[in-house]
Image (cartoon, rainbow, N blue to C red; front, side, top):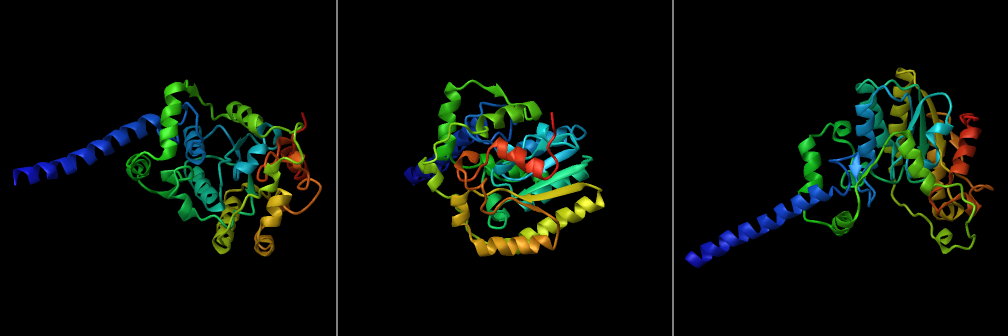
Length: 313
């Protein structure tokens, strides 16, 4: 009996110690920068959706123009856009439902918005918000979803270390912490590094043969989200510009073209939009893309110019 009690105690104590150690390491590592959004070693991609919303809520009067979209709109530099003081909310796989939540939150917190650019993709109507809410990289800000901070942090820190957490832990031991400035200067310095204008590309690079693949169908929900964004903009006198990002020709061939055309047809009934997605001299030129998903800053400038938003310097 004494031995069995001992094993019961051990079976409780040992897992508890392992969990507590994991929680401590997760908090110290802060892989997705949700505890220290401005002080991170930046050795892995943080949750930019959370970080940028947090930044704007802390500076509600600093910007009156916003670019909403996925990582593809990173090539639209705020300093190149005319008509407002722009901030780029770009983050991985940004989808319309999350943009709607963020827009509502900004309006609620007194952010006065003059202009809004909404970039859409071929995956905007294929990626589910519910799936994003179960991923550390894309989980929405708790104030946007009206959930508790405890629930939000529990999601990040009350689990055993994943392989990515372990990699981040090792990297942080040898890395020097940096102050990441999520203001315009910091954004543009970062994006110019990765979304450069492209002059040393190799046309036969095998990366251009691999499409960026998505599947799923959230078309009806996505269209409803866009309709709500359009309504909100009208109610609050926000000038909205909607566009569909260029799609690299390899990814375009892999895309469900029927679903894409159905989406475009329905979108036209909701709002005017600019369409850069189809096959053209830009999307069929590898020099305009850093991979089969992301276009360069040169293309970003061309998009702005086509929409009469490019700021001539």
